Image (cartoon, rainbow, N blue to C red; front, side, top):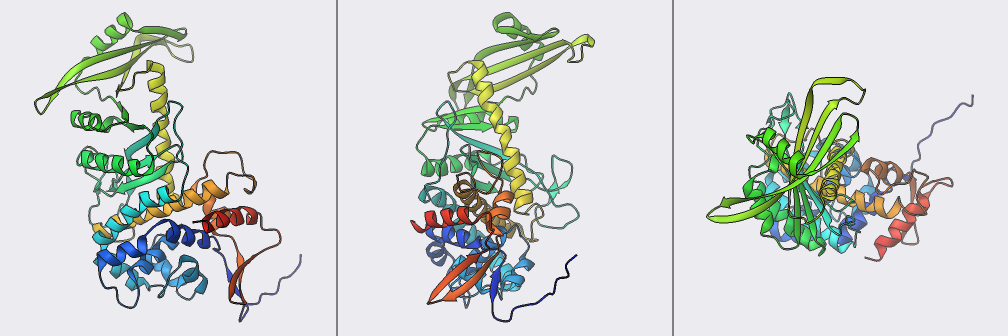
Length: 442
């Protein structure tokens, strides 16, 4: 086996994260971050507020969330140049302190930049076959056990942590907002203001009809009334049976609904019901789709002593057959993948600060980083120039980081130009070149 001799160059510059050039270009071309933050946060000292935020977005786009990771980037001139950092890369202490001191102001700026980035980039926002653009909202737990961080409490997954609520737009899964919440906060608490806010952000991105999909944690009269107030907004909300008489609903479904027999010992009834409810003195009429499944023989052919009955329901204002309403709701489950990309691909399950406001800012910055990586992946890893991968409608953030962000290159300064020189057999070069050319048109 050949023996390698190791050397370190004294003057040549190499980078293991050349894809930050794409991140920096996207961040600075498609958002007004620098202008907004200078107006909101006031004087910044020797390191600009915008450069603090750019630095942390650069870390997140490498899958790093801890403040200590910035130390390894301070002497990297390419890191600063690629992200458009005009002053200097902050130290760990400066990064932490600045985010602590201006957490709320920074978060408002970042939240306003999220929809701006999706809109100005011309990102594709795909609709469902029904013509609606899905807007999915859900709570997901983040395990921060054995810590004393502000807001950590017992979650519905039976561990201590946070329970943020997230919203995703389109089949691509563009994230509009993630609101950090204490782990013990009920999903419905403060939900209606969040709902109205994200619908407003969705309207900044697309004018197509929206389809809001919610799980049973948000089955509340105030939610359905709020959804009715918005124009060109349809909804499917999973019904929570609570104290209702399921036996009576079973009898109603099999007596008045459409009954099918998918196999021996299994009957399925579909029926649509309507009812009136009163909220703040006004009467509203709502439609509910019910599916009742009765199994007297299980899938292995074993007879049951008593039939197993499952009653499911969905509130909706769509005028579609029951099968289509249920089929449209099934896509809501894709959110679990998007949640996992936040927690694992961006490495933010265990948030880096002990302060709740700072961690809320981290989540907002993670939303911006998530959308930037999603945009780079959609532009570079789905077309003809993509490195060899299985066909897909979208790529995980981890794949984007692996294929385009952590590409090694030599940084060459020549004739007042900065050149990224990639290896002869670099598989992602054509994709990188295509994305960068797209960003240069901004």
